[in-house]
Length: 287
Image 1 (tube, rainbow, N blue to C red):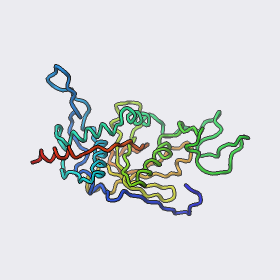
Image 2: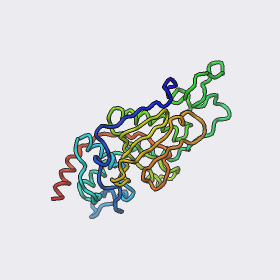
Image 3: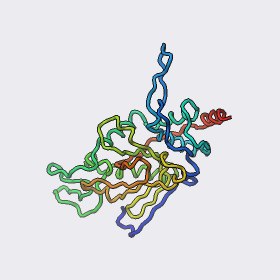
Image 4: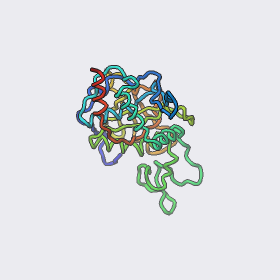
């Protein structure tokens, strides 16, 4: 935070024209137990199922919603999730795979899953810890306050996963929103080195924020939340927590993830894909 700003300083930004209740899918991220796709091999009369749709298509849904919004197209009015084999289902699966940003995206999920919420301050060998005053060449500390996050030599790799989210990922999310773009976000909900737990993480789409001093509240589209409550989902954190120390960052939220915490988050890479072919085929199949 800029120390010259008055107490109670407020910043707001929102993507014009977007609210989940009017721009997102009417159905929630609730799919039957079924493969995401089938891999057909030569000489085999059937395909090999890959993935499990019941674990969720959240990434596909948020990418598709951004595709539709940027194309100026309303989401289809379906109140039930599309069935496997339908054009809309295939489109959501393709966008889900795109949201994984293979292999980079999955590696980010796994690395943050394994990372600690906080690390203890080093006892020896490190003269400077993020959030403390930086030593000058004589070994004394500067009187200048503020976080050392992002500066060369800041030992950023030793920051807990929540603090890294605030330092590295929040500025990217804010840039999207300040530029009028929806921001896809990967959410880390578990602490585990078991890759089978990757499916317990989640994805949401940020469309607005309010910042009061250092306290930030993001408004997000959560595919798990029913449409009647979709406009009320938030995720909040305090940027003062990014300044250092060995405590875990507190991130509060109303995202429908079964009571699991949000340990960390990151800005996902996105490329637009034309939704119109899938929607035309979907509409034709309903006639």
